[in-house]
Image 1 (cartoon, one colour):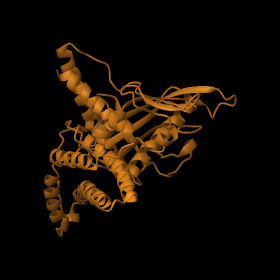
Image 2 (cartoon, helix red, strand yellow):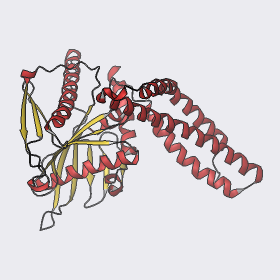
Image 3 (cartoon, one colour):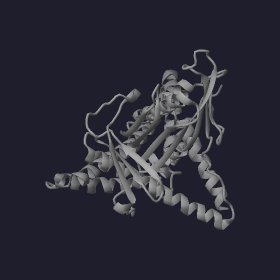
Image 4 (cartoon, rainbow, N blue to C red):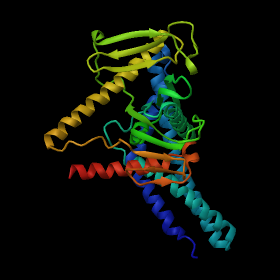
Length: 372
């Protein structure tokens, strides 16, 4: 069996990286890093703590993005040097090592290339994810908790910070709902393909007769707003309720009424936050979530109006989007893209990149077809 054509493969990787550099505008990122660095160095930075956190957070994220690109470019250069050395000395071990590294680098470059497909209005934003248990009783609540762990593990694998705003525990096990943010550039564009209905089929650990159970959970993904986003909510349109935070099984975890629930009266949108220590902090976090959801609602209404004008009203593409089957066989399959794996354990441990990349490519194709 012939080995890889190293020269052609490396040239292709370099060409792809050049395209990625242009599309992501790495040079613009470097300029913004320099500007943010000047702001961080200012002695009065922390006079405005909200702005200081925004500036330092943005700086850290951009530095991570540029460092990821730079390190990958260096890996490709080192790969070329390793191949050249192996070929000059006829070292089969070095060439075998180069072949293994080539496969690893190709996967990382492909994942980075997918980033260039994220060109939607809010794709570059951080993501706000809400998971709700659906039909299926305690199994559905358990499934919702499994999904939350899956996304948190995925974020951890990529060193993306996760901020949990609210967790509503079910009585017996699992979650009724949970809301959390993934703080990373393009987190919204990446995770938005996860929105929709997820379905789990397994032998229920909660059924003493060991019967197979089907359960459902809904995933909602919206972009985190920035200060420049125009979402003004009059005070009279919001009802504020405070209550005592609780943990699993209804156990109280707070002796004061610090948890906050906001209801947007005109739309009926309800959000809550109980993970901060004070009522004031919870209210501020809940307002961030509410504004993000109202912006997403506004964009959805605008899109629906355009679809109606075109006479082409379609249901949400995200509904019933993925099956997780643990019995009688094991498979996780995306119903939109056809992407599948026979290792559900790895998926629930956060290995989602294959599904995310397939979803992003699928959505790009669907958008192109819709625009034609």
